[in-house]
Image (cartoon, rainbow, N blue to C red; front, side):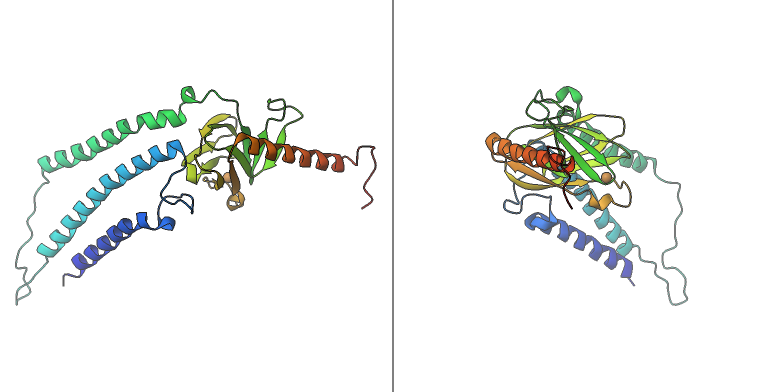
Amino acid sequence: MRYWSVLFGLAALVCVGVFAYSPFHPDWWLPNLASDPNHTVSTFGREIDSLYVIILVITGVAFIGTQIALVWVTWKYLDRTDAQGRPVRPATYFHGSQRLEVIWTIVPASVLVFIALYQMGTWASIKFRSAAPKVRPLAQVTARQFQWVMTYPGPDGKLNTPDDLHMVNDLHFVKDKTALIYLKSSDVLHSFFLPQMRIKQDAVPGLSIPVWFDSDRAGTFDLACAELCGWGHYKMRGNVTVHENQAEFDDWMQKALEAQNVSQVASSGGSQGEVNPR
Ligand SMILES: [Cu+2]
């Protein structure tokens, strides 16, 4: 029976078929806006996507090549016996092939070196501190079990002053402007993940890590924690709002500050020290 070669062949065909179909189905491909599924909103995202596609093509060619070899070998060298139950083609034993060993070491090694060198520029512009944009920080984001605490500088433009705005799981920034945050963790490792912007950065206790990103579309996006950080890991889902322009952002900030001040007055028992009769 050539059962195994048929099975391996079919499995490989299904895999290749699924991959070929995925780019045409928004939910199966890389996360983008539902209204514009073929557009990646962030500058780095487009670079990351092209790297991803290059790696996918390399691994795809290797996958198809090895699957064809596997199916062909299992098909051709089927274990057959004659009427007396003896093998038609006795097995031969040999001690490897030095030439093959050298080839299949050098080829993957050169591919890996190529990928390592090719992605260096992108990596540097996304992750190196020296590449961090010289802009006013948008916020400080502190991860903790199990939420994102966002602290925005208030009207004085400085962080860690009494007029700061504190939000939970709610990130806001402006379209076409690079947003710079400082990422912290107050307990364990978390990972700040903006899928549509293709940004992922670990939040490490004791470190304040600059993270920057942008979007050329306004709208609402996702924030997730990409590091299993405890039982409530799934709760660390946040909302990202990209505002159309600075005025819209300022408007939101103004309203949020007012709401925060109202709740502060209420929790301190009113401005005259009256206690809410509840
Ligand atoms: Cu987490």
